[in-house]
Image (cartoon, rainbow, N blue to C red):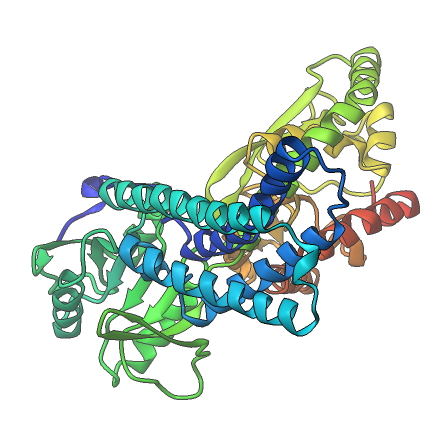
Length: 484
């Protein structure tokens, strides 16, 4: 068996390029190409060459309708499926067919309504050829990009298999039939500690489930596939509970089990069916939207609040000796430990860097300036630095100190699903905080309630929910409930 010391991250460590984002962007580009070609033809031929000052309104409307027809028609032919985008010949021939069909419908409409005389024939010819030329150019560049992504391994999903038995051998054999550009098998793990082979069909067995959890912190895993027999229900259930905390898609490579298992659907790797149990949160467009939200708003907030943060830094230095910032190790994305910044609110010689000792009401360790900062949550402002550097989000489950306790126990021991909240980046504010769960956690019930709110947020994330939470956070700050 391969132990922890052998867990060297293999190959590519980034996420596979999202096919959904690529196809979505391609649809948008096709729509823009049709309209841009119409505008370009109008400006060059009618305005510049002919010198006419005709209004562009009718031409713009025609281009808009044509763009809708073309994108809808091409989508109807499954032209935006990723496997279709990788075939330049298919794109060129079907693109010409759909564009010709879209133009024919427009010509028929113009003939019936007797509006064909309102358009310049020269403009129409320039527009039609320009659109298809731009379409071919974009598809050629996309085809070259896809080939390059495939060579670099950017399209391959990082997959690990759990279970080193016969089913694993069958699964790995079928996965090996797929091109290496589609699936990269990073290794095999098993929930047993004995009778584990060193490799299965050439794929190394890298250790136990604990090893897998550690492995996932150094390598980004796209998908975990459980390959166990049907009669191993207890093992499967235990694995599902433990592996659901990973920020990866969790799948079963067996037929549907009892209704006790949540099944999202059935996916396929070639001819291999797998049952979808848990989806990675914030994937595809959601992940991209969240990234832009954090980067753009985080930078804006940091710039806007920089003068206030400067004043706070001066007041902290005048009030007590010690550094301006308090830096603490806390749980981040995928249970990784990150260093979180806060303004120092306690006397330097009385602070608890571990976070094991809770802050209570009228805590004598808190300075005069610190009481005001904590009451208004201004001590959290330096975490905007963590947001901009990518370690945190503006909105998400609050990052807890690694030694934080609830009811006398370590938080992750006291609440079974606690680690599931780390499937997304922690946030400066969160759904639990704006729903009254702010401040001291002195009971198991409070701890579980916070985790429930965090998991609800993760499972129901939307951009507008984040905006709502940000506005609700302002109200919570002024109410100052449980802030000390």
